[in-house]
Image (cartoon, rainbow, N blue to C red; front, side, top):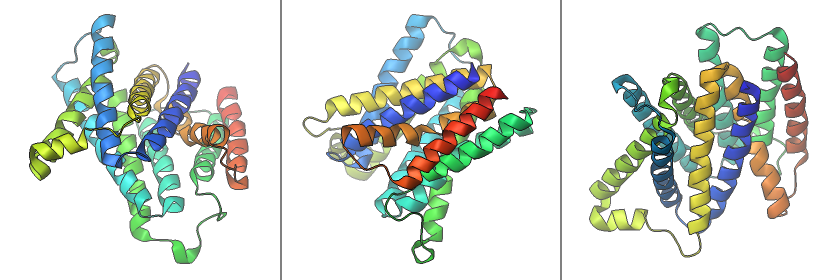
Length: 287
């Protein structure tokens, strides 16, 4: 079950990122993030109420708040790094960082994957870096490497990973409430920051979508929240290390969608990454 949910997380997250990328072509990145968070803050609590899930206790509320803030900061760091033009550094490190932290947590808390599974996880981590790498250069030349961008990418990944760990610690009976609370807290925080920086005008500007981009943002926000719900469920039921590793293969779905829908060329480095990922997943399943 952990393997299936991890792969579902990758598929849903990758699709959400694809839609978010399209929406960001028409809106500032911060606007896309803010509105997408609003979608999750509306849909997930409604699902939690309808499903009859128990409302989290104080400790799980704090974990949810921490997860929401960590994810929000991670997204801002990621967009900041990508905007600098160092995608070949930032994207792979953020994807790997999002997997490494939960994997380390899982092993530190007693999870003992088999040697076959560990080998598959190692191959998956390599595949993540290759799939997320910027096409066209076959890698990052020494002169292009920027330590600050590398740190930004890792911090973004660790932010995502920290959120994943916190969600995995919430009680099973709370269902998707932790994800809903995380989204509500993120929206409130973004609104307060926008109000403090730009007043009511800043809030209106930050939370107003460009014409025609609404469906993309709704799709991005809804799928992003669904991916988190799947991750939280998978991390509670199965090894966190396995779910985190497979879930972090999400760039593969984004790359395939970009190739099919936008006719972007699949670079040989990414094709190699997908092949390695397939081998890694096979070993994880076999283990």
